Image (cartoon, rainbow, N blue to C red; front, side):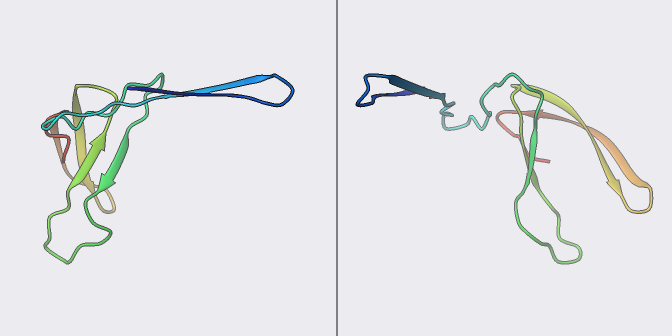
Length: 91
């Protein structure tokens, strides 16, 4: 979706702004594509109790990706590879 706004000032000068948005479907959590390689990792909660499993949503400008995930504390405790897609962007 493209939203565009235009305004003309008293002096007759025009100003134009626009913004593109990705509107996902029911099973589509894919983020919009941009001209950078940025990904955001968002936790499902702000804190967890001992023994609770943490989940993170990976917002990325790709339909699919392969992630190397590590669990670390004073070094790497565990490492694994997981496929991430727009349908299931959680790790």
